[in-house]
Amino acid sequence: MASTAELTAGLEPAAASPRGAAAPIWLRLLALLIAAGFAVPLLWLVLRNLGGEGVVAALRGSGALAPLGRSVLLAGCTAVATAVVGTAAAWLTMRTDLPLARVWRVLLCLPLVVPSFIGAFTLLAAFARGGLLDRLLPAGISPGRIVGFWGAFGVLTLLTYPYVLLPVSARLRQLPASLEESARLLGRGGWSVFTAVVLPQTSGAILAGSLLVFLYTISDFGAVQLLRYDTLTRAIYASRLDQPTSLAYSLQLGVLAIAVVAAERALLRGPSRVVGSRDSRALRVALGRWRVAATAGVAGLAVFALAAPVTVLAYWSARGMLRGSSRATAVTTDPASLLAPMLNTARASVLTAVVAVVAVLPLAYWTVRYRSRLAGVANAVVVGGFALPGLVVALALVSFALRGPLLVGSLYQTLPLLVFAYTVHFGAQSLRTAQVAVAGVPPRVGDAARMLGASGVRRFAEIELPLMLPGLLAGGGLVLLSVAKELPATLLLAPAGFQTLATRVWNATEDAFWADASLASLVLIALSGALTWLLVIRRLDALD
Image 1 (cartoon, one colour):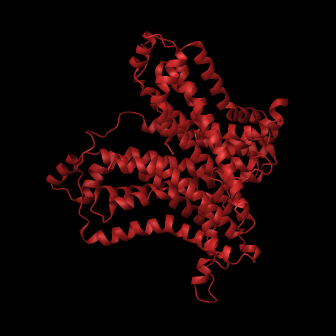
Image 2: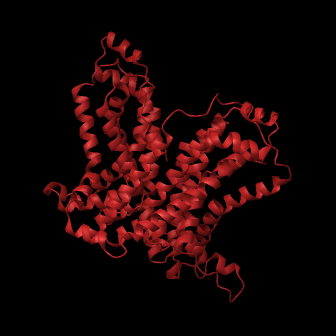
Image 3: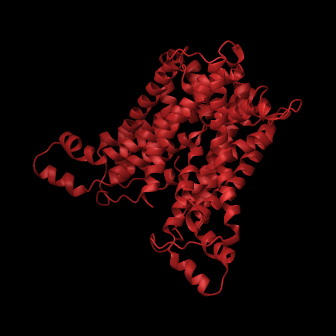
């Protein structure tokens, strides 16, 4: 997932038209129409909350602000913990003589493939009666359960620290070794070099990753719902049939999310403090007597964040297939049982990826090729959809479909409305890559084709599109990955009988069918892992 600072950063268009040149009227109208579509959930949410007596009563009710406080508490603690864990892991794998550092760099990124609701499910399944821990402990000793704040905090910290690890690792790659060498020549020790040189140079990346974790945590629904910690998302879902209350909670969450994005932009605005360029002679700090402890720490992190969840899922899947007669652990061996959710996941994900890329391309052209404040506003509207939690986007569209015009109401619980919600929520991911792709097409190429008599359509189809295609495919892949793991929007907006892998896991978990949920989780993790490898880890590994 791209940081919100990257998504909201204004592009200085490398391929821009001369100052004063205006975009074609058709391009401006098309881009504004698309931006208006992205603004529908937020505008509807605000309009429904304005002047509503039920909304005011809900906000003034006893304990109305308690879920907000719990959301901020959980998000703040998780952001701080991931800042420490992610920064330490990045420094150990990038700047020390840690054994097998290249392998650890890959393994420590992989928790990205585990959705939070699957992480919470594995925690419940591990401690469940008949679970792995129950089998390992001596007879008569119960493993108990970890729920509430500490359960949610542990799961979200283990699954989101890569959002700090990745940007900090990227920053460390760019940090010239000469800075640290100079500090050492001046007599500074290892810890002093880290605090005086490395930490100031990576503070922007740490802050960006931590704020992204904060935004992820306040938006999370699956983990807090399964682990029974009453945050805003859980309050919204519980009151979804009481629209004034659910919309009031949604407005709180939406305002909080947008405030986090605004804070990130304000804090990270300005030139980077990193000097120089990537240095292949990156300084490696000798860990000495701490080498064993550091290796154990990194290995433990990989075990708890990745190996343990996969082991629990594999245990319940195998047990269910071997003991299919027990309803509580039954895993049907009929391939069609998982084939339909897999096909539905693929259909919704691919369709959304295509729609998102096509939708944001006109806006990418406008923001990159032409200098316009209005284009910047349209860009901010699209990014606003990314900032809003998926649950808030879905609930706003449910209300809009039920209370909107007749034609809109007919879209409720249909695939087009579900794809629209996905596009609004994840479209900003493809917008940023589309902007980079458009900026990478030299204007002189189009000018030469124009001089040779090529029409605008032909120039786009035969010259510009092939050059932009890799970037557009990467953006579409990010959207596809996000849609495959999305849960709350799918629960609220999916057509009747339309089950994805995410909702299959959710429904099986709620029914305590541990084995069935485990098998579907393994399939979803495998799919997410393949996409994450292609889109993120393989590219990072190629830089080494």
